[in-house]
Length: 483
Ligand code: BES
Ligand code: MN
Ligand code: ZN
Image (tube, rainbow, N blue to C red; front, top):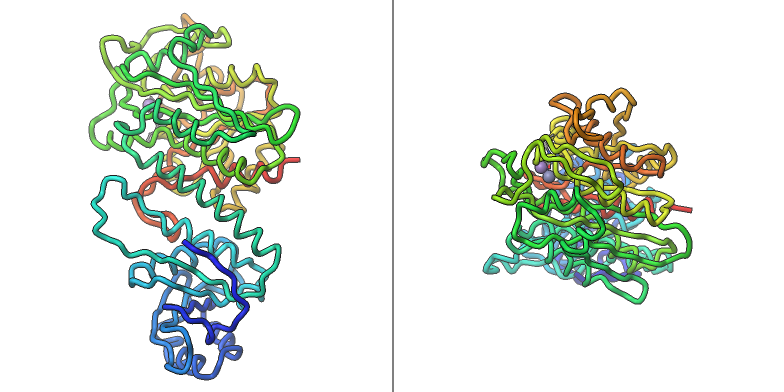
């Protein structure tokens, strides 16, 4: 997709479709348009088109102007218009124009500048919305929107904003590709290859295999990997954009979660290829941070393995010793995410990090509590929690805090080991996080559960069906603000 800026008026812009944004009932915007276009829009306003959020209406343009067609896009009630509404409009407009076979679009930006919202938000929505996953399809559908021209005066702010949003959306789509790819083509080693593809002068990658993990004593990580013939990979990325203590990102990277011996029901099990969406979000974040050279020391850790049942698999009741020495009684082999993250946290703590953020499709309970709209957040550091809340609002990858009251510690008491890996049926979202808290200890740490948000069955204006790529934008947003 080609994004350009041109300082001309809409009626002068040769394109397949010229986009005008309107608020609900906001026909006062018509005064600024050339009379031929204004009178045409007036005829449909409040009848075929009223400006409701994400409403679109395409019509033929008058012969006297350059664009072939005009697309009206609704932003909803004027006092409720936000950056997010504009991103959604971008996604909606771009995918609609593509479905109509349009190739070249232009956006009139006067209305947005009037609202003090950058047209870059519209482009972000368009670039995210146009994503498709076609690796296994004979490409019968060749329709694509090839360019959007922003009708605006060029400025450093605008070109920089476009450059950043192209990198950011590229990283989100990179993460989506990893998650959408089925487990037979997205093994732990394939994830390692994806990580290695991100190497630059400032970003190095280290990949540990089963033997390395054994030597280090990663008993929890290995307990999950034990049932699979596929070699596990413990992947460490190190981006040195600044000196000093690193921020560590940990992404759950179970490339397929069958549950292990505590086997999941077969209904819907195919979805468990997305159990590495946390790892994909971390890779996406590393990719954009490195591309934009953010001044931060950032480590990414991806404990990558399958979780399968077999003659060598971990059995319910087995006790293993994790990297920090704690013994874990594995009551349920389907609670595997917390095991691999526990070892990753122990590994991270050796780097004396200033903060750890882990992101994981950790619990079905998250999905039950929040549906597909909200990331569950728990942590031990108020500043980090509040910063993530703010980044969540800015990116619309919204997070909601849940408690880590000390009473939950009880739930994880084992009769024969230091801790057990499940806390019983109730409070599953919180006890999973509490398990991780026992490993994070005093180190500033936040856990993000994306089980409900990493995959969508229903397409949204800028999130096509399948992997949402959630987490990359959220983490980038908080790192950008970090001082
Ligand atoms: N990967 C799953 C959680 C999950 C469920 C993610 C649905 C996305 C959609 C995780 O490993 C898991 O199986 N959790 C168990 C924990 C239980 C055994 C305590 C769960 O939530 O059922
Ligand atoms: Mn599981
Ligand atoms: Zn899992």
